[in-house]
Length: 151
Image 1 (cartoon, rainbow, N blue to C red):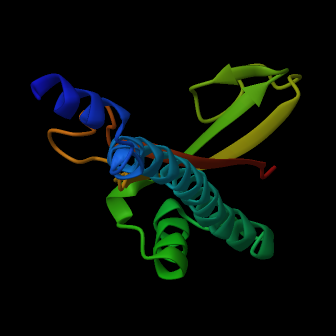
Image 2: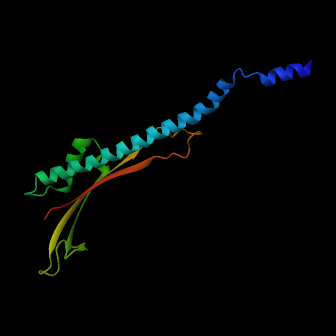
Image 3: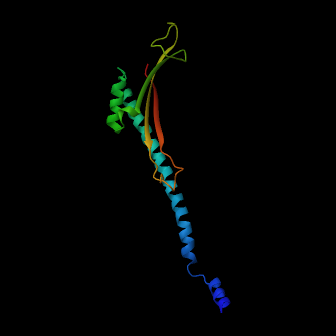
């Protein structure tokens, strides 16, 4: 009698689809959320690059008098809402193609070029950062930067 019941249970296929679905759903959901998270991270990176471009557009529109670092930061902040601390403006000159930390070229015969760099940093918090489940996913900083020759 016991063997007859065990044979009947062994051949019983009811509920196997439910068990397979229960095993496969979390894996498929993790892949789907991972793909969405990857796409959102890429979109965030593009947005941060556009924030830096706001500053470059402002500098280019005011080229007769190059705006100050504070003015550039303020314009990027107004256009993007990024905190001022996440916006970096750096200026440097190159004398005959060599980067120079001095405010002018030492030799008057050197080819003089002035550059301006605008960099915007912003953190991205992934949607998959679920403690205990997806601990391998970390917040990352997206950086957008633009370099302009201003003189």
